[in-house]
Image 1: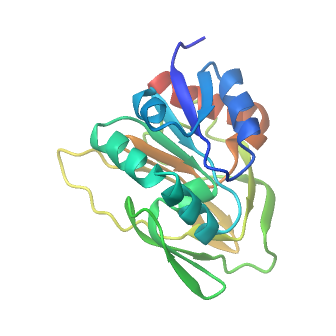
Image 2: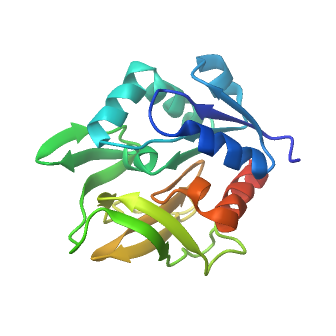
Length: 210
């Protein structure tokens, strides 16, 4: 066991229990809560999310998730977003013509994939970013995706002394961001908790970095 305490933020979005189980399998001491102080004090905060961008963004705001995430990142305390929990880290999302503000931690817009079949559902390979911590030892594994929308560009130019982010890409119809590791904020478009042994290893890599 790592002894690292991770809070899964419980804001009524997504199958949080599978994330709790996967984190426990990865060696974390896991707590499912929406308590502000517990979320701020934890070694790591996991933000799950499934469904529509607008609904996830609204639920996060309603439970103070935006302030918790902001405060953690300002203090260099790690946050991991999963699926729509990754998408809402960007400035905005467009779904069925509806524009919704995200949390704005990263610039850019999440939009529908230009692909012959949607949703993008099932296992896919990724192009692992240079210097990745999350994908250490699992660079050539497959991961489980279930989504129709994604971020397709990275719009931040990082200058020294700040470290370049590690960007991991995947392709379904077009290229999109499968994962981002940017300082204390990391996120995956795929579901590590549904990605078998490779997903557990990814979460273990994150937990051990806390």
